[in-house]
Image 1 (spheres, rainbow, N blue to C red):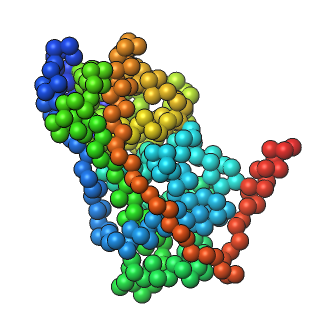
Image 2: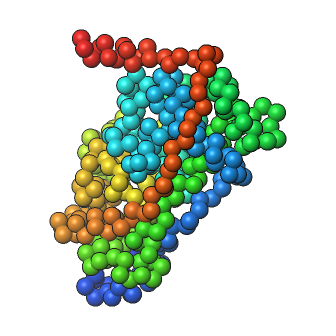
Length: 359
């Protein structure tokens, strides 16, 4: 969905709402239910027919650093489940201390999105999981080498066979990424205070948070951030009304245009979900902004063409904090041991980077 010069229908509905002071909690909740939904308990299966054995294997692989050439980087490195499914870095640190080009989005609730990555270049979680393994500035391992490494670890034979009992060759890159996706589908964060408010608990939000919700709707934020995820379901140009600074929107990163080649897609990015947004600074694809309040102000200016007062920013920020749901409770898997046939970590690039830093 591309929205460019027209005002979204949800925005038109929102701006007709009554001012916050005139809205009773029950009326506010009724208006909110027209624009938002509680987060479902489970993500869509995405066609992989996940089983418990597949999820168990996927959890192992999500935390498996031997999928990287240095054997230092796992999926959890950049999508840390202890820190909201992201890594608290502007851009992630990858192989040989290389910096990625964009901020790592949270993995939490990712299976609800229309596509993966900021530019939507991966259709689903399994396709996304394959990308970082082979990316030279992330895990920097070829798919063939990652598969070969796992085949030298006997402890993976049984989990793969259990997850894919009908496969003649269980350990393949396709099955690895399907298993990772099966595990990631379990990483939902339901029962946020806002969900409880939508479900009828009018005490779940305090007066400031309700004022923030009202401002979020009436100012037009809901035009892009609606539904169960408050985002994640469309692409929008970053700088719809006026371009943000080059630090916030680097000119060389043209977003979805780099995938499609369509000039109309310049600076088009997937609208991020605002679920758990208070846990995942810094913000934007550039990771240039650490303050959630500052991010709110920038979005109002660049997307809506308005300046918010300090009080409005504080209220909207308070509302956004009510989107933090119950975090997945994770017991770390015990990974099987390497063998004499398992390749040693390749830290050549790490050593080179360290040597360069000491010069």
